[in-house]
Image (tube, rainbow, N blue to C red; front, side, top):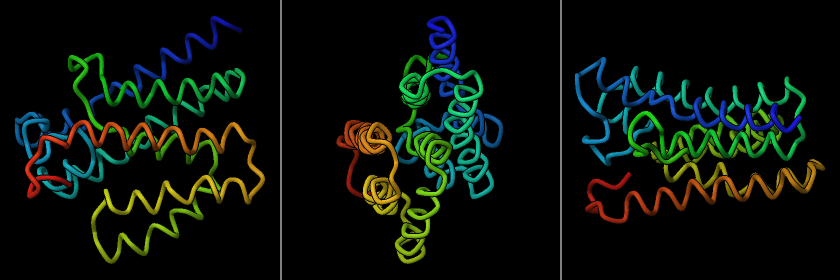
Length: 192
């Protein structure tokens, strides 16, 4: 079981390392997305800099990387703790991808995929909550606050295990930290 767990964690990291926004930038405009806009290798920057179709495609792939990691881990039958570690590895792969010299995105969509696969009912509720600020602001970064902040409370109210509630706090904190360290040097007009 240790080898299965280790293999799944490595698989999570490799899946997370798939640089969908980078590939989209190269295929659509022949550019490195990390050199455009806010420099983020994620769906929102792809949307702004490469267009809506590229942004949607990148978002689907990035959410899928996280969800697929959890689904594979659950299918193998490893412990919940190791499923969570595999999810963390997928976010680490997205943020620090092996294929691009460890310079990646912020992990927001990948985190969304992981948490959606772990807690689908709770995520549907918070997606409903987050839809309102998104429709008003059209700002993904602002909306993510309304997505990730109420999730632990919704998970607790639904009777989710304590480890999932803690994870629903920790993983978005990693996204927030990564967002902070990658945007603190940007001028205000470029920040997402």
